[in-house]
Amino acid sequence: MTSSMNSSVSIKDLSLNFGAVSVLKDLNLEINDGEFLVLLGSSGCGKSTLLNCIAGLLDISEGQIHIKGRNVTWEEPKDRGIGMVFQSYALYPQMTVEKNLSFGLQVAKIPQSDIDKRVARASEILQIQPLLKRKPAELSGGQRQRVAIGRALVRDVDVFLFDEPLSNLDAKLRSELRVEIKRLHQSLKNTMIYVTHDQIEALTLADRIAIMKNGEIQQLADPTTIYNKPKSLFVAGFIGSPSMNFLRGEIAKRGDATVFTANGVDFNVDAYEANGPLQAGRKVTLGVRPEHIKVNENLGAEVHDATVDIEEPMGADNLLWLKHAGHTMAVRINGARRFNPGSAVKLGFDMSLASIFDAETEQRL
Image: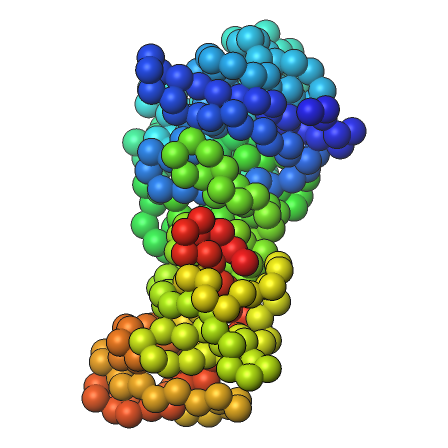
């Protein structure tokens, strides 16, 4: 496997073992110059471990890591041309913000005039000029994280690594800093690799998302593809809140029509773009996102009966939990529309936006 000409970070056949335990398994990943790549997965999937391998904080068992075309597999973290932002901020409590920003540069014996310019530039970009004389204890969580980002920024490197930088913040601050990080990337155009377990962060920030499970990348694609055409049942269930609705059944033929049938109810799937023929008798799982189900309007030709079980008003949206054909499913509708529990409703399914997975392999068909 060769690095592409515009590759910023290239990971080749990377494996990491802790004793007999395999943590990362034969990973290959090309990250383009200036790309914002998000490593997404639940706790223990290996995303932070992979980031630490790129940073040089962990020695890999096999494989190679190239940054800007240079093999850095065995180089020290300080020599890799990376800046890292940690979840815990990792600021020096006894130092002012200005000193926190400049300390690493002073250790590296950067000329003081350059240090002053870099600190001034980072402070301006992150809007932390008024905080320079304060110490970390005098800052809010959001301000501390800005300083932590600034400390990476002053290093003037090609690649920035973020290890769940917003997970210690409350929801409002997370939302605000998410916008700041996106603006920062658009301004700097540096390569950024960002670890998170938060799918909203991944979908809003990423150029591409690598979804990880058990030390392996399950799917690598842009957010739209990940959301609308998940490669596997795992990816489909992991992305989306609430999760995609899953119905287990099989493919059947009704005259010229191809249908998915479950619990005696048929769903016409002729509009579904399959990767190959959908063969009758094949056991499959049908997945439909909550927003791709219509309730009582614009139903299309095929109409299904259901009963409202629970209603969850969520402001702009209203989430209905419905009983249908022996399944419980979530439906997202406009928040102005209300339904009482027990109400009988009619449903229409947009099968052109559905997903069908093989029951055995759990891969998209």
